[in-house]
Amino acid sequence: MFRSRLMLCLATLLLVCLQGFARADTCPAVELPTADEWKTLAGQARDRGLLWKISKGGHSSWLYGTMHLGKPEWVFPGPKLKSAFAASDTLVMEIDPSDEAQMKGMQDPATWGLAFSALPEPLQAQLLAELRRACLPEQLKDMMSAAMLSVTLTMLEARRIGLDATLGSEMMWLQQARQTGKPVMALESAREQFDLFERLPREDTLQMIQQSLALLDSKAVLTQTGRLAQSWASSNAADLAAYEQWCDCVKTAADREFMDRMGPQRNRKMAPKIDAAHSSGKRLFVAVGALHMVGKDGLPELLQKRGYTVERISFAP
Image (cartoon, rainbow, N blue to C red; front, side, top):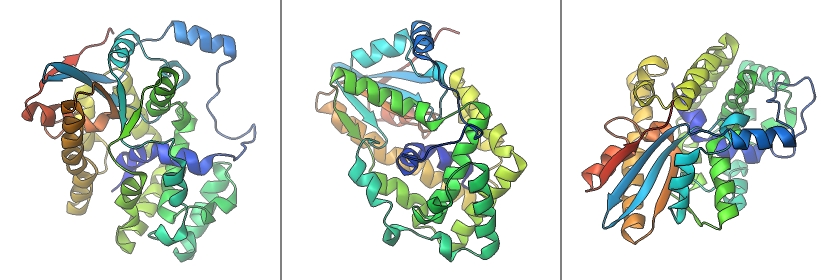
């Protein structure tokens, strides 16, 4: 029901929860390049993802569809992305992952929809087994909600196919903003994203956890995440727009309602905020998840309806 879309939405939040935990050499992990290899990758950087130029009121901003998981070779922006970012004066993200106060607030059990201790014993046993398989300490179960724990485990599974949240687009653009002194504007608060699942009914939360465990057991999460990552890396907007047709995650009316809340409803709140910031004279580089950019309810379409001239910027193969 909730699966990859929820996982991607919360990727940056999970980084905070996992900071400080060492991983053994035998644990699944993405091998990081050496200092010299990083320099080589920087020199070979090419553009990936989805980019649009939007113009209104005599100036332009940019919309960039990100991938919340990444590989070392994806860390550095290519020439067209560099040019767009240089022409902007403000980085806009879904949330500001550097806002530690917001992140720490989510570790308060009073804000959780369901704690690990409130789960049925069979689910507790399954989650503990997955924690051990992911080489995470068992005390993590007491440091985040049950829903967040299941999403964390699903997220970290992507390490087995070379994808890591610490190498996602958001981390790269945040670093670029720090280096250039650009301010960061958030379209949502961490609390708003957190509440997308913490305020779900108990039965829905239990179903989400059960489905996450089933995905981990069947390895289907690797197939889904791998296709999503490949579609993004090859700038395949059509395949991303068809996500709900191939993700095997929209089967019921409840699924469709949740996906609408995850995508179109949030987009309709983001679009006027982007419009207001652009109309104030700012030149924005809006970096949000690629699934927010595609389809009739995507941000490019919504902003075009608000009077913007929208131009897709193609990347070299």
